[in-house]
Image (cartoon, rainbow, N blue to C red; front, side, top):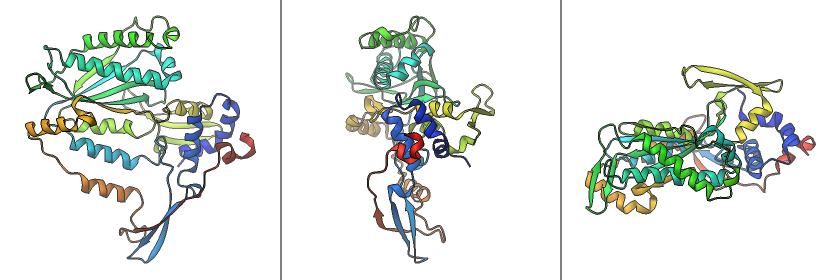
Length: 369
């Protein structure tokens, strides 16, 4: 099976040579970490099996959030935590997109643009939720940034999962959304367009905004997702997973990479073959700035409002379902803590760390210099 690391190893030197003056430090770090992941460069753990009386060695992972080998456990653990936070109410999934004319601006100014996108979209939802025609109170939201399509094209948008409950702080009562309805989409789209334009004009990007970017139809989508469990599992693939997994890469031959994707309209699995350098460019454009938070919480779901959330849960008599057993089982199964010979749980007896890993160009040798 061809992996993302294989593609980087085969065509990374040529990519570095061609784009070394324009390659961002974050892109270099991701390429280096993926190449070093689970190699001797990063050290290893020693595991002892009491049943077999054998010692097994497991190389350390790079822990980079853009590495396809390091996100499996985190994804399942995030699902478990979100399930514990579910309230007995109807949930809604809203998606905010930007027109194609603004995507190059977002790609060139990711940190600034995405922070504005989060701020504006969450404000719009909160403004309409407080309207007397809708929830007439403050609601809670979880927002997740997603920037890629199945073919790795750049398409930034934010998903929000929202419980259909609002808190009226004046009367100290809870209000429920109508069945299958949270807020009207059309006024939400217009408000989003207006506030995003106003926010961008107030920044250093005002002279870079393409003409007619705000004249077309702005797409904001919203729908009911029932209890919210399926929506959480759907969004989990964007929380810790990367733009493309190793399982989707079919081959890398003769300077071309073939990968599979699911067609958005027909839902049929198809195959795409593109030049290796173009494949790397598409993948690297989805690397987020260092320290950027792609998951954000608002309203009574914000971590600083945990006391308020717990009071609401008591009022709703929501039952806290513990997933601790499932979480521990997932960690043991996916991280190699079970003995490969007998399947029994092993004991970690040592953790070996090495010095600072080599720079990216040293991994490729003199051809990348």
